[in-house]
Length: 109
Image 1 (tube, rainbow, N blue to C red):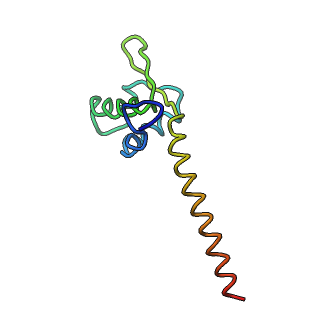
Image 2: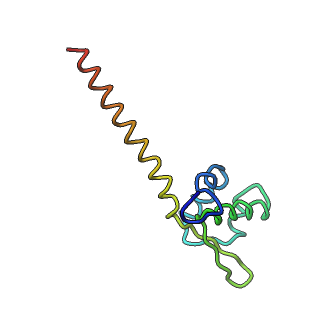
Image 3: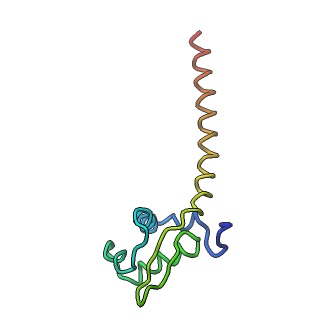
């Protein structure tokens, strides 16, 4: 589970392509109202809201009410968990590729 919010795992939250698209949209804007987000998808407001709820449960999305409108913004800090996980394996791959390169060079001699 995520340290940011125990309700939803960050990896689970970003597993869906719709939620990844929502994250991208929110990353490109300071804040977006629900109706503007919904207009970008071929699904209804309820479906988009469900995806946003999952992202909120993982701590990736924050919302606030402005009158009757709900506006959403990205909280990217939980993505650090994913970045750290990928960095660990990236380091492992880099080390393995370096070893392979060394072995190939030794065989050429």
